[in-house]
Length: 119
Image (tube, rainbow, N blue to C red; front, side, top):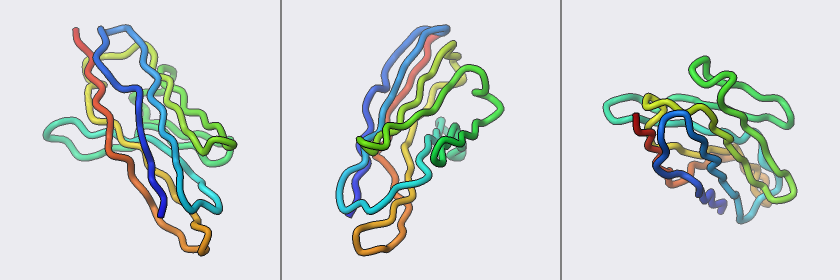
């Protein structure tokens, strides 16, 4: 079993920054890729940023403002969010594809962390 625990969301004014993190723990053999998704009220969940080894991918709406990174030793992924806009307000979810110590592959999701950007 693998768990993803997020932290670091919150309330910030437009133009501000936040840096949520997501730590994976449990019966992990390997974990790749890791990423962030978000869901605003009334909207579908959308990809924000993913990282596969050192290769990153971003939604067009966050390019140049958000940076995804990871600490492999800690099985942790970060999302540095700068120049935040009210439209970035959403619940942010961490996701990871993990190979367990029993060599089974699953996609896991965190519980979500609320990010609210006030205008």
